[in-house]
Image 1 (spheres, rainbow, N blue to C red):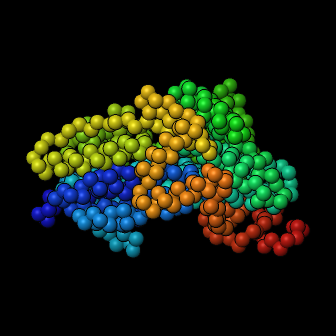
Image 2 (cartoon, helix red, strand yellow):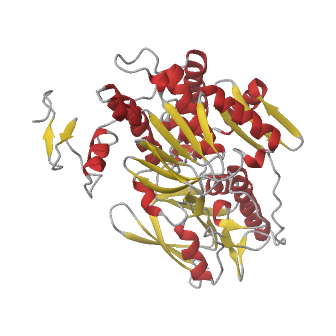
Image 3 (cartoon, helix red, strand yellow):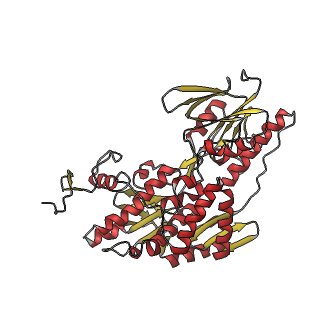
Length: 465
């Protein structure tokens, strides 16, 4: 136990689970320390809108300190957790300045979330970024808008076609949403912006290993989503698996076992998730087990076996086949907070009961699909429900107001307010990939070209010798 007479709660992670746990401990007789490597709370369901220029970083990632400023018993620490000592009841973390801090606890809530899974092919991430963090979304924004810029300056028709081909891997909500937005961006958002290319000629392919997109929504909504995607011009490749990814394209194996190469310069990975590495670290510290996705197998009350004071929640826990969605993280965070409060009053812990709030995905302007219990909505009515739910769950009045302003501009006129990209995100990265350089993160001069030997030279407007 901690030396302080006040019950010490350490929360690892400022996502939906950790944030809701902290909020619901506001008036409890406890002192809360929320530890996160980042200083913001990420509204992950809207990352695809950051990647496609609809929303800004601040609208999907408000500062944790701002959100919790009125929670007097909560202290926010920006640090990267490195270890757990469950016997001593401490958490070790490194601050940005390199100093190491140990946080004692009486109750520990670990909600470190999940990362992208490449199913054993992590090398794919270099050329096909996922979309789990702000950095991922900004990288993708640079690649998506940068592809149109590169196509505008490309005289060779085949090379231009490669720049205007986008492959999205994964037919779940994230893949469907990003594919729909890229198609809509090309056909409406960028019209009239270029002189040498027609953005509407862009080809968007959605590759998925299942037989249909949004399979968990049911056949009816899945079919409606597929029809809307096709109306936008998205080509759906079902029962297909990506077997290789490189700077210039992907290899896809179809249902018949044949492999086809798709030449494209922009690839987006939206297939599969795995728990944060902290899940395995915590499991090893507590003698617990992890499932194939790296999630900790927990008790019915979300605690580690043999450690009732330690909670693993959200995407980190394996419990009754619950899905890795924001609602599970929120509700398990609230459950952890309520369990801590009950114990302080001498009451027994209760089993975690998940209330399914349904699923939704937006396909295009004024078109979304919603599955809520027996209710199935699509089209404009589904979009209205999607809008209401996302406005409700966005953190902070200013964020809601700002998001509404940007959504009005996008949905009414088709414009995109957030289209700023950098050389690091686009030209420097893709040129280094093309040259086969090992370090794709270093900064290079804007607009460089490479000769056949792979040596970089400034682009002075003249063709190479």
